[in-house]
Structure formats: C-alpha cells, structure tokens
Length: 80
Image (cartoon, rainbow, N blue to C red; front, side, top):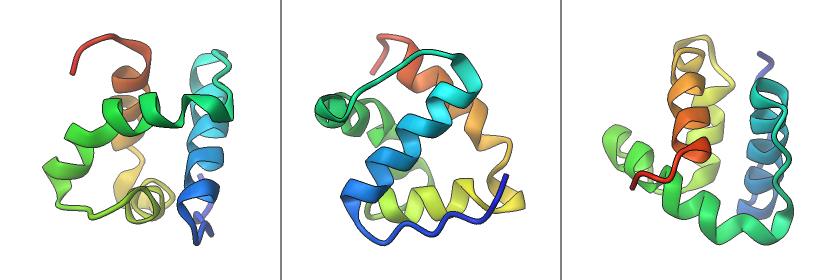
C-alpha cells in the first residue's frame, strides 16, 4: 500500500472508494459518501481520528495495513 496523499474529504472519499474496490471488487460511487462516513465512523472513533483524511493517511501507512480489512468489512456489511 502506498502512502495516502489525500488532503480533502472529497479526496478521502475517492481514495476509500478505490481502496474498497481494490480489496472487494465492489463498486461504490461518490454519491455514497454519507454511507461511507456512517459505516466508517466507528473505525474513526476507535482510533481517535477527527476526519476521513486522517484515517486515509493511517490506512496508507504500514501500521494501517491490517486496518484495511476492518474498513472493507465495515463498508461491505450493514452493521453500524
């Protein structure tokens, strides 16, 4: 996984959509941003991140590579 260079919430949504597709082959579109925020909210709170940009930066680091599985699971299932 490469370092995440997103700087805005919009870029974070796009990054997460690409990451989700890469790991699950399920396509989300940009209109699903509220679903993405809702489903990943618990993961952000778990780590104390204030926004998706911080979370994406974490996912792009070696330390965050195991979190990708949790992010994909959160996006793919209907559990909040």
